[in-house]
Image 1 (cartoon, rainbow, N blue to C red):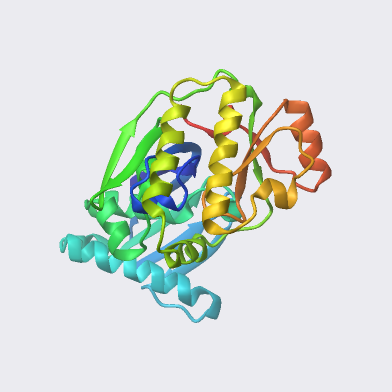
Image 2 (cartoon, one colour):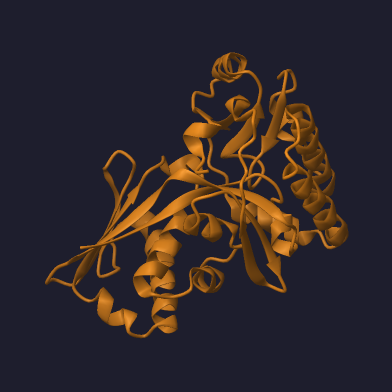
Length: 298
């Protein structure tokens, strides 16, 4: 049996603007996804298991009679097709095998079920994961960089080429940093589509967010850290013409709340005392509250 594994991801700075070259801070998560390849004699079987070890998707020879599985099969076909175009010998590897994926986080968490899959398939196919992503799924590639690294990273696109810089990032007040799931899955493609319709001011936006990212690496105090996150939120809110998540949903929170990744869903980062953060968000119906040290590889 062959086994491949990739880390999940959270984007702390540079959401959207990372597509246009902004320097971004991204954190690989302890939870990720594995891919097991097991030889068999009867064609190609794919089985996807969730975090509870239950099969949520399966296909034999990339065919399905289940209507809800058709988009998933089509996406999987596209990824595997591109991988085989990049490395023609990969076609032989797919003959007579069982591929099993195992998620280590809830499917609706938005920690990178697609990016971990692509990075795992790239390892199996022995191809470049960034090229596989760009040719199949699209995106900036920061999530692939997180899948491959076990420490926080800086990431940027330079002339369309991915650049990754592993860094030491572990704030002294990490015991006051929490990731709260908003009980809904955000479609990042929708947010990216909206961002791409905005044609003016992107160079300035990238410059502003890059500067904030660089400031976050200068070991700011908790107060300075929060100020930088709040500035980041306001800059993006003005650019996208979308309210910040704090003004929209948490105006009375006594601390800082920042959107992560595509705005409107998945996780937010909250800064505050543990007891207060847990009490506040639990009272609002958000029960998935994960500390920085529980979530992040560093």
